[in-house]
Length: 142
Image (tube, rainbow, N blue to C red; front, side, top):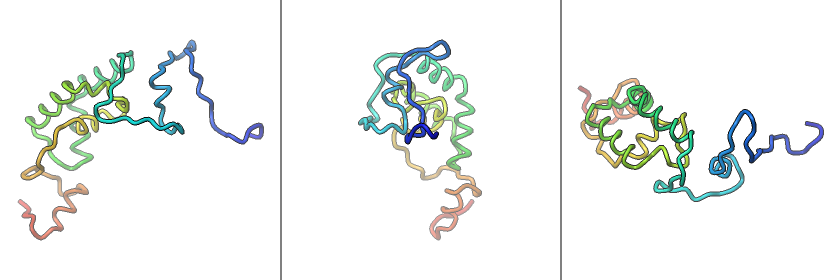
């Protein structure tokens, strides 16, 4: 890095033999100095192979995504809640959301779910949420 005072790679905004260029992903790349106002309602304008891959991966690995969420948030996800999450994910075209990636599919199911009361849901005692709740004096452990 002795030839430059900027020790990071430059992004190349054209297709090359080993990778196709995606202008939207190029403009919205993380850690870039540009600011883009992306809201929950923001969607990409065209479906590329990447968005198809995110959609198919979410569909084919739905059970795994629910398992990951259960482990991460410490709440048991019942079948009716999982079904609601899936319906809302598909209805909102979450795979077209700007920040939807193959790496955050489980959390996109949560992000696009409408608000839901946590009252009466089953939590794992060893989860962070479970530990917090069981410290409270007004929560009855069953």
